[in-house]
Image 1: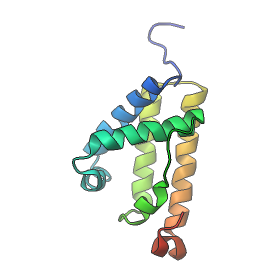
Image 2: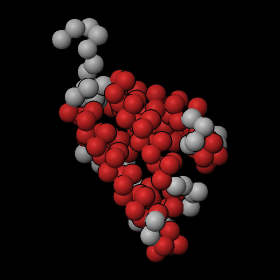
Image 3: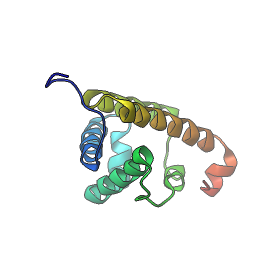
Image 4: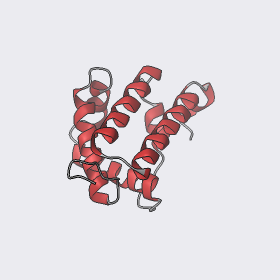
Length: 132
């Protein structure tokens, strides 16, 4: 392996690097940036910490994140295009920084989350109740 070869996601530090880089792109994106900026407002440090815990749980199976992300998203004006943009940015960020099994898992699990969220948002029962 050469010095320029990408490493896999293997630590919480790697997840923090990924999350930080991803949200730089999110904030600049014309489709989802305004939604995230409006929802998070001045609480970016707290949000980033929460997302590191979330992805640590998702990627490594370490139960450091608690909560239900869907109800928060159900109250937002989100459509398929927003999830498509989110997934494209996530995938590009992972690919820019990492390569390996955990990186592939991070992309697959993000894709599965977008499918689940969109299907729930399209279901009037979930949309009205904000249920998981």
